[in-house]
Image (cartoon, rainbow, N blue to C red; front, top):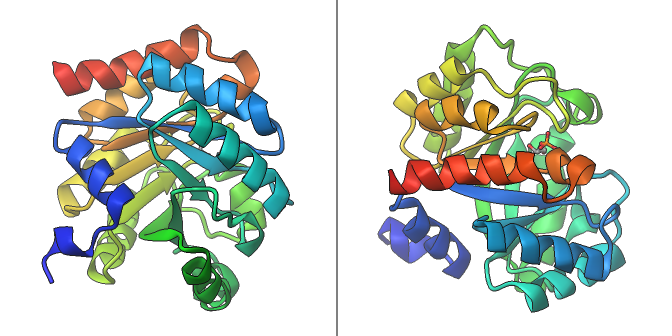
Length: 255
Ligand code: 1GP
């Protein structure tokens, strides 16, 4: 089976977009932005140029919250709605796909693979497209670093991050996500993004602490395939910061 034959419709659509350059994902927390609020946020984000919606964030998200938000988002926009799961409780058949992700540098085996063994049959039963992803938390890691019982990759160790990323690719994961932690004071260092980009071929997602166009530019120059932002819209709505980030991504796509 060739690689494109393995892809489901969402992964195929994302890879088609990525062939044209980097893209942007808007992270919406279905607990903080409920139902129609999430739909309205998604509509504005996509109008500004964002390419997909990630649903996730808080701990303690329930199926009902994800169902409501995903339904509203799918009514509002026609870009993919992808679950960024906190656990099996975040799964909803109302979304288009789920990032089926292993937290590679967690000390807790549940987050590396054991929860997945329990969740995989549910993902299949719900008919959700699973996109296999290696998730790597970089210092400071913020809340996901704590809750995820992570040994965060030190910011001055790009080679360590590249080792995890290459292992993910060799294990067959088709996305790699470098995460500084939601609300991090600074994004993943551009030098680390560049080292990982040089090392792997699969798309590289970068998130955590991206608040301005100036934050986004060096990450794009270093070869990030996808930038994810959440906090900037939670704190400022679809304001200047959000628009500047998306504009940097669109500029990197279209030159
Ligand atoms: C969090 O990487 C995402 O998982 C987004 O981070 O909330 O800091 O934008 P921010």
